[in-house]
Amino acid sequence: MSDRDPQADAAAEIRARIDTSTPHSARFWNYFVGGKDNYEKDRELGDHIKEIHPGLVDVARLSRRFLGRAVQYLATEQGIRQFLDIGTGLPTADNTHEVAQRVAPDSRIVYVDNDPLVLAHARALLTSTPEGRTAYIDADLYSPEAILESAGATLDLSRPVALMILNTLGHVGDYAQARDLVSRLMAGLPSGSHLVISDSTATSEGMIAASNEYNRSGAIPYHVRSVKEIGGFFDGLELVEPGVSQVTRWRPDSEDATPVDAYGAVGRKP
Image (tube, rainbow, N blue to C red; front, side):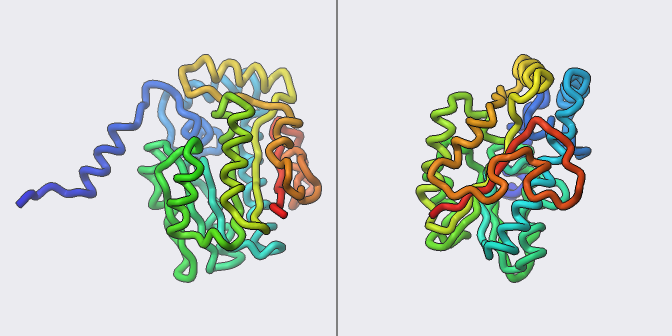
């Protein structure tokens, strides 16, 4: 009989997939929001980017607050109880399930990411209330039908779902392909479902310069887009007021509307 520990073997396999020799977007973002799940290369690049465009730190921090307000709105005002969060990133404060389950403890959340470091920390995303449920899928955005099939083990896909894709679509370099992936995901969700997207935008020379420098770092490239292109992801959906706007100006919970190079919106599937 083998005395190997399957859990230990799985953990070792995950660790072997983590490449610390080049920066990674999830770890880079984690550094900007004050997290500790990052490595020297991520911090070096982060410090360099801050010299080029200090406003990117605000993008990271305030995009997270947009997520919280969007989830709060959907759970409180739209009665959404199911969330599919793709490109989850590393756990921080006020993750999707924490915000949703504070409003409605029976909420169900499925997280999706393909970063091995996120997978290694996935337990932090699975601390559900007894009434609700959370799950994690190790997959990427390029397999929308597979994501939906796996999510169906936790979510009832015949009932409305909030699809969350925040600060992720820039990894898809081809805009038409990015739109197609979003469309295929929304096609598998019923009427009354919502789409939430936010992303960095090419709305200043500083952001464009920072994006170019990031893409020269060896990390998987990230492409900032125009505000019009962000809006294109919502074609066919009913935009929730105030529509596509800077993330700080989407239903702000205070008077702090710091201008940032990041736009987002929430749309409802008719």
